[in-house]
Length: 205
Ligand code: 3YE
Image (cartoon, rainbow, N blue to C red; front, side):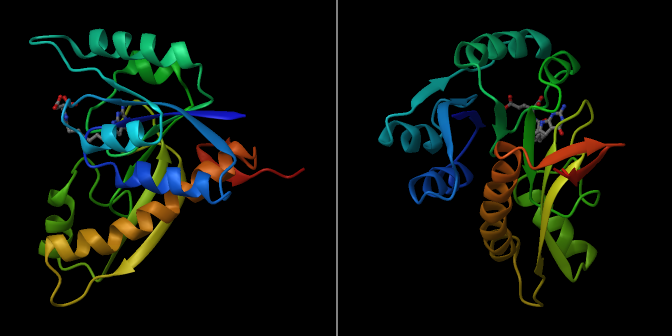
Protein backbone atom coordinates (compact mmCIF):
# COMPACT_ATOMS: atom_id res chain seq x y z
CA UNK A 1 0.00 0.00 0.00
CA UNK A 2 1.06 3.57 -0.75
CA UNK A 3 2.43 5.13 2.44
CA UNK A 4 2.27 8.76 3.57
CA UNK A 5 4.05 10.65 6.29
CA UNK A 6 2.16 13.88 7.05
CA UNK A 7 4.00 16.88 8.51
CA UNK A 8 1.94 19.38 10.50
CA UNK A 9 2.27 22.41 12.78
CA UNK A 10 -1.32 23.23 13.71
CA UNK A 11 -4.97 22.23 13.78
CA UNK A 12 -4.66 19.52 11.17
CA UNK A 13 -7.86 20.04 9.20
CA UNK A 14 -6.05 19.03 6.02
CA UNK A 15 -4.79 15.91 7.82
CA UNK A 16 -8.40 15.21 8.82
CA UNK A 17 -9.50 15.54 5.19
CA UNK A 18 -6.93 12.90 4.19
CA UNK A 19 -8.03 10.58 7.01
CA UNK A 20 -11.71 11.03 6.04
CA UNK A 21 -10.92 10.26 2.38
CA UNK A 22 -9.13 7.08 3.47
CA UNK A 23 -12.07 6.04 5.69
CA UNK A 24 -14.61 6.62 2.92
CA UNK A 25 -12.53 4.60 0.44
CA UNK A 26 -11.76 7.60 -1.75
CA UNK A 27 -8.03 7.24 -1.14
CA UNK A 28 -6.26 3.90 -1.13
CA UNK A 29 -3.28 4.98 0.96
CA UNK A 30 -2.04 4.61 4.51
CA UNK A 31 -0.82 7.32 6.88
CA UNK A 32 2.22 5.77 8.54
CA UNK A 33 2.97 8.70 10.83
CA UNK A 34 2.15 12.32 11.60
CA UNK A 35 5.07 14.51 12.66
CA UNK A 36 4.64 17.96 14.22
CA UNK A 37 7.27 20.59 14.92
CA UNK A 38 4.90 22.09 17.52
CA UNK A 39 4.14 20.08 20.65
CA UNK A 40 0.60 21.40 21.17
CA UNK A 41 -0.61 20.95 17.59
CA UNK A 42 -4.17 19.58 17.61
CA UNK A 43 -3.25 17.55 14.53
CA UNK A 44 -1.37 15.20 16.89
CA UNK A 45 -4.64 14.42 18.70
CA UNK A 46 -6.37 13.68 15.41
CA UNK A 47 -3.62 11.18 14.58
CA UNK A 48 -3.74 9.55 18.02
CA UNK A 49 -7.51 9.21 17.79
CA UNK A 50 -6.97 7.11 14.69
CA UNK A 51 -4.15 5.06 16.21
CA UNK A 52 -1.59 6.67 13.90
CA UNK A 53 1.94 7.26 15.24
CA UNK A 54 2.06 10.93 16.31
CA UNK A 55 5.54 12.32 16.81
CA UNK A 56 6.71 15.69 18.09
CA UNK A 57 10.01 16.95 16.78
CA UNK A 58 10.81 20.45 18.01
CA UNK A 59 13.70 22.57 16.89
CA UNK A 60 16.44 22.92 19.51
CA UNK A 61 17.55 26.41 20.48
CA UNK A 62 20.01 27.69 17.90
CA UNK A 63 19.76 24.54 15.85
CA UNK A 64 20.70 24.93 12.18
CA UNK A 65 17.97 24.27 9.64
CA UNK A 66 19.74 21.34 8.01
CA UNK A 67 20.46 19.74 11.37
CA UNK A 68 16.77 19.77 12.26
CA UNK A 69 15.99 18.40 8.81
CA UNK A 70 18.48 15.54 9.29
CA UNK A 71 16.74 14.56 12.53
CA UNK A 72 13.39 14.85 10.76
CA UNK A 73 14.63 12.63 7.92
CA UNK A 74 15.76 10.00 10.40
CA UNK A 75 12.21 9.73 11.75
CA UNK A 76 10.69 9.79 8.27
CA UNK A 77 13.02 7.08 6.96
CA UNK A 78 11.94 4.75 9.76
CA UNK A 79 8.53 4.69 8.02
CA UNK A 80 9.89 4.62 4.43
CA UNK A 81 6.95 6.57 3.00
CA UNK A 82 6.16 6.89 -0.70
CA UNK A 83 5.14 10.52 -0.22
CA UNK A 84 5.67 13.27 2.37
CA UNK A 85 2.72 15.64 2.72
CA UNK A 86 3.15 19.12 4.21
CA UNK A 87 -0.31 19.78 5.64
CA UNK A 88 0.09 23.14 7.33
CA UNK A 89 3.71 22.44 8.23
CA UNK A 90 5.20 25.88 8.71
CA UNK A 91 8.89 25.35 8.19
CA UNK A 92 11.11 26.00 5.22
CA UNK A 93 12.89 22.80 4.22
CA UNK A 94 16.65 22.88 3.55
CA UNK A 95 18.10 22.14 0.10
CA UNK A 96 19.58 18.96 1.62
CA UNK A 97 16.15 17.68 2.64
CA UNK A 98 14.48 18.66 -0.64
CA UNK A 99 17.21 16.91 -2.68
CA UNK A 100 16.97 13.77 -0.54
CA UNK A 101 13.24 13.48 -1.22
CA UNK A 102 13.14 14.92 -4.73
CA UNK A 103 9.57 14.88 -6.12
CA UNK A 104 8.43 13.03 -3.00
CA UNK A 105 7.20 16.04 -1.01
CA UNK A 106 4.01 18.04 -1.65
CA UNK A 107 2.73 21.22 -0.02
CA UNK A 108 -0.65 22.95 0.11
CA UNK A 109 -0.57 26.74 -0.20
CA UNK A 110 -3.73 28.80 0.51
CA UNK A 111 -3.52 31.04 -2.58
CA UNK A 112 -3.26 30.73 -6.35
CA UNK A 113 0.49 30.48 -6.94
CA UNK A 114 2.60 32.20 -8.08
CA UNK A 115 0.59 34.96 -6.40
CA UNK A 116 1.11 35.42 -2.67
CA UNK A 117 4.00 33.01 -2.41
CA UNK A 118 6.05 33.08 0.77
CA UNK A 119 3.15 34.24 2.94
CA UNK A 120 1.31 31.84 5.21
CA UNK A 121 -1.65 31.57 7.56
CA UNK A 122 -4.09 34.47 7.78
CA UNK A 123 -1.43 36.76 6.29
CA UNK A 124 -2.13 35.28 2.87
CA UNK A 125 -5.84 36.06 2.97
CA UNK A 126 -5.27 39.54 4.35
CA UNK A 127 -2.86 40.25 1.49
CA UNK A 128 -5.37 38.93 -1.07
CA UNK A 129 -8.09 41.23 0.35
CA UNK A 130 -5.76 44.23 0.62
CA UNK A 131 -4.79 43.77 -3.02
CA UNK A 132 -8.46 43.73 -4.03
CA UNK A 133 -8.33 40.34 -5.74
CA UNK A 134 -11.68 39.04 -6.98
CA UNK A 135 -10.66 35.38 -6.89
CA UNK A 136 -8.37 33.39 -4.67
CA UNK A 137 -7.91 29.70 -4.01
CA UNK A 138 -5.31 27.12 -3.19
CA UNK A 139 -2.42 25.34 -4.81
CA UNK A 140 -0.94 21.89 -4.20
CA UNK A 141 2.61 21.68 -5.55
CA UNK A 142 5.75 19.59 -5.34
CA UNK A 143 8.32 21.04 -3.01
CA UNK A 144 11.61 22.23 -4.45
CA UNK A 145 14.44 24.34 -3.01
CA UNK A 146 12.44 27.56 -3.37
CA UNK A 147 9.40 28.09 -1.11
CA UNK A 148 6.03 27.85 -2.89
CA UNK A 149 7.70 27.41 -6.27
CA UNK A 150 7.70 23.73 -7.30
CA UNK A 151 5.58 22.11 -10.06
CA UNK A 152 1.83 22.64 -9.56
CA UNK A 153 -0.33 19.53 -9.19
CA UNK A 154 -3.84 20.90 -8.52
CA UNK A 155 -5.33 24.39 -8.12
CA UNK A 156 -8.87 25.29 -7.03
CA UNK A 157 -10.39 28.75 -6.95
CA UNK A 158 -12.99 30.57 -4.88
CA UNK A 159 -14.69 33.92 -5.32
CA UNK A 160 -13.66 36.80 -3.08
CA UNK A 161 -16.77 38.51 -1.68
CA UNK A 162 -17.07 42.24 -0.95
CA UNK A 163 -17.70 41.61 2.74
CA UNK A 164 -14.99 38.96 3.20
CA UNK A 165 -12.69 39.13 6.17
CA UNK A 166 -9.39 37.21 6.25
CA UNK A 167 -11.21 34.65 8.42
CA UNK A 168 -14.23 34.21 6.14
CA UNK A 169 -12.03 33.95 3.06
CA UNK A 170 -9.72 31.50 4.84
CA UNK A 171 -12.69 29.27 5.65
CA UNK A 172 -13.89 29.24 2.02
CA UNK A 173 -10.39 28.50 0.72
CA UNK A 174 -9.88 25.79 3.36
CA UNK A 175 -12.76 23.71 1.97
CA UNK A 176 -11.02 23.77 -1.42
CA UNK A 177 -7.71 22.86 0.20
CA UNK A 178 -9.24 19.65 1.47
CA UNK A 179 -10.47 18.72 -2.01
CA UNK A 180 -7.25 19.72 -3.77
CA UNK A 181 -5.03 17.83 -1.34
CA UNK A 182 -7.05 14.62 -1.58
CA UNK A 183 -7.16 14.85 -5.39
CA UNK A 184 -3.41 15.39 -5.54
CA UNK A 185 -2.62 12.43 -3.28
CA UNK A 186 -4.99 10.29 -5.35
CA UNK A 187 -3.27 11.24 -8.61
CA UNK A 188 0.21 10.57 -7.22
CA UNK A 189 -0.67 7.34 -5.37
CA UNK A 190 -2.31 5.93 -8.51
CA UNK A 191 0.77 6.81 -10.57
CA UNK A 192 -1.28 8.99 -12.89
CA UNK A 193 1.01 12.00 -13.16
CA UNK A 194 4.59 12.74 -14.13
CA UNK A 195 6.77 15.84 -14.18
CA UNK A 196 8.03 17.00 -17.57
CA UNK A 197 9.89 20.28 -18.06
CA UNK A 198 8.76 21.34 -14.57
CA UNK A 199 5.12 20.80 -15.49
CA UNK A 200 2.90 18.17 -13.94
CA UNK A 201 1.10 16.27 -16.69
CA UNK A 202 -1.20 13.24 -16.87
CA UNK A 203 0.73 10.10 -17.71
CA UNK A 204 -0.25 8.50 -20.98
CA UNK A 205 -0.47 4.72 -20.53
N1 3YE B 1 10.27 24.44 1.92
C1 3YE B 1 10.79 24.46 0.67
N2 3YE B 1 9.98 24.62 -0.44
C2 3YE B 1 8.62 24.77 -0.35
N3 3YE B 1 8.19 24.60 3.22
C3 3YE B 1 6.90 24.79 2.89
C4 3YE B 1 6.76 24.89 1.52
C5 3YE B 1 8.05 24.75 0.98
C6 3YE B 1 8.92 24.59 2.08
O1 3YE B 1 7.94 24.90 -1.36
N4 3YE B 1 12.10 24.32 0.51
C7 3YE B 1 7.38 30.29 7.82
C8 3YE B 1 7.26 29.10 6.95
C9 3YE B 1 6.88 29.44 5.53
C10 3YE B 1 8.74 30.29 8.51
O2 3YE B 1 9.60 31.05 8.15
N5 3YE B 1 8.96 29.36 9.46
C11 3YE B 1 10.19 29.24 10.23
C12 3YE B 1 10.00 28.22 11.32
C13 3YE B 1 9.43 28.80 12.54
C14 3YE B 1 9.29 27.76 13.63
O3 3YE B 1 10.16 26.89 13.76
O4 3YE B 1 8.29 27.84 14.35
C15 3YE B 1 11.35 28.71 9.40
O5 3YE B 1 12.47 29.12 9.68
O6 3YE B 1 11.14 27.88 8.51
C16 3YE B 1 5.84 24.85 3.90
C17 3YE B 1 5.34 26.26 4.11
C18 3YE B 1 6.43 27.13 4.64
C19 3YE B 1 5.84 28.47 5.01
